Length: 122
Image 1 (cartoon, rainbow, N blue to C red):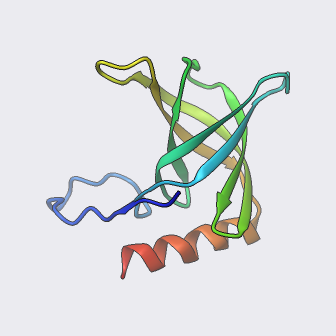
Image 2 (tube, rainbow, N blue to C red):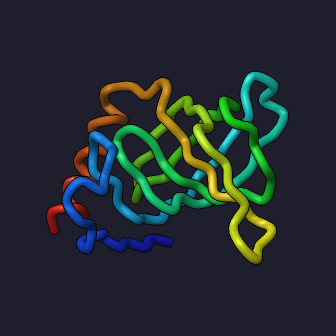
């Protein structure tokens, strides 16, 4: 499943992030660290080279650590992430979680940057 929505209606100064974030949906395998007992599967809602927004069925407290395997069209990106926020979706039993990439190797970061640049500038 792949969904792309480029945000083009933002006003100058609205975006506080250092890198572009694109609304794009990719499958993700997540593992709660350090226990490694809880593995769940979800999708991204948006993505940048510094982090991602994902959907989950349960609440994760701020600063929780997750290892993610992000399945980009025929390529896997692995990263250690930190939950920076977790909000319940209105009228739903799901949560949106903002993740910050704590550890991601240069090769994986370059894969993300290439993909995001293609989407953002197409």
